Each structure stands twice: as structure tokens, then as C-alpha cells.
Length: 93
Image 1 (cartoon, one colour):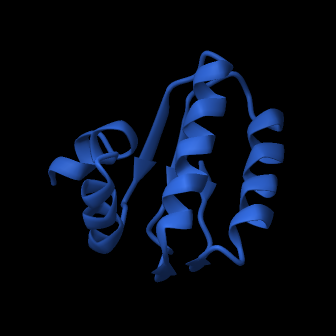
Image 2: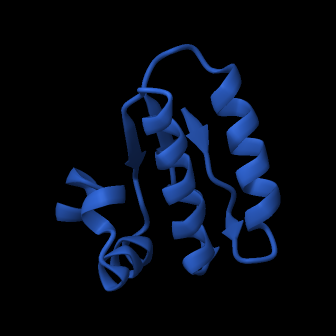
């Protein structure tokens, strides 16, 4: 399971994506699970990072899920129309 930082804005997005990508490459051939529970301060860049991680997981034939997204992240994903893509069942709760 990969953990998102407490802050993920445009300033942190490139470094966070780099770190997540490196970790994804070294993980076993299982599904990709990202825990978003630590997110406290974020903007739409957090969605971009998650979408890119999802794209990479799909390219490698792995399942992808986001666990414990904060309500504001779920609302932002819904606003942009990517809640079903990114958050799946978590968006419904």
C-alpha cells in the first residue's frame, strides 16, 4: 500500500508522482492500493497524481484502488467527473 502525504498541491505533485512511480516499479506484481487518509491540504493536482498512478497501474496490468479518500477529495473528484474512475466504491460512501 502506498501512502499519500498530508499536503499534495501543485508544488508537491511532481516529487510525489516521482516517488509513487518509483515505488510502483519496485512493488510486487499485485494490485496498486493508495491510502489517501493522510491528505489534509490538496488541490486538483492530487487528482492528476492519482490519475497518472492509475494509468501506470493499468499499463502494467495491475488493479488500482484508492482507500480512505477524505470527503473533500471525493467531492473534488466528483466535480471533475473522475470519481468513478479514481475512487470507485469509495466515491459511493
